[in-house]
Length: 302
Image 1 (cartoon, one colour):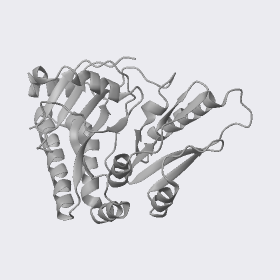
Image 2 (cartoon, helix red, strand yellow):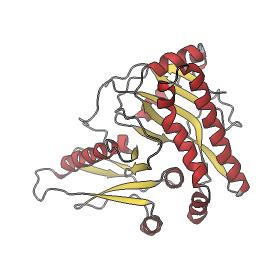
Image 3 (cartoon, helix red, strand yellow):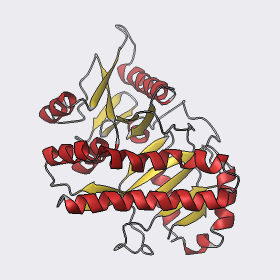
């Protein structure tokens, strides 16, 4: 059973309608932050972050620059993923002369990310953008969408699973993996174009359930231990919230008091489609990996 919780989170997002028939690519940002004149680095991505990106996206886009090396992957892993055709590199050219390096780098990374997100030939998503570029960001567009969090909707291999097993599973089951992301990407358009939006919303989320269950079954058949993770993404359609609030009337009474704070902190200010670790909520049956909780906001402001 899917529960859609209506909240009044105050964040701002940039809206894009995703197209299901294109390649899905995720732009990975370093685990760090550009703050003023300083680059803070907190180490590489976690095993879960890497596995999630490798499994569910056709390509991993990495932003590089010609001034300073900012590591995302361990070098041998990066070379392996590049050889497998998974990594897509985008080089940002720093000007030869600039007064302050980090603010310029901040703007260049931000501009490049939004350039990719606006591409019409691929579905680009971001991960880590809101943390890496959150200070003094001028690219936020006001009132442009709504954040939805589906909890436990992306099964991941256990963090000790070797990368060669993950790559083998990706190659063998790429159709099923893509099917789950396609359902997520097409959710908004399906509901928007349907004559009976409330029924279509129920059908769409039920299909996400089924696609998720299929991946879990395949993990079990391959003897790969898995853990659930959550996905945050944005809608750019106000009508879906009217549908959700009518169809799931009263669901908000079950929202734990801290949930809105957790989601608000996770959403960031420039996310378009971002993936987060599973959010622990006391009212979720943790034994049921299909028990999603969606948080639909009514209003977003900076």
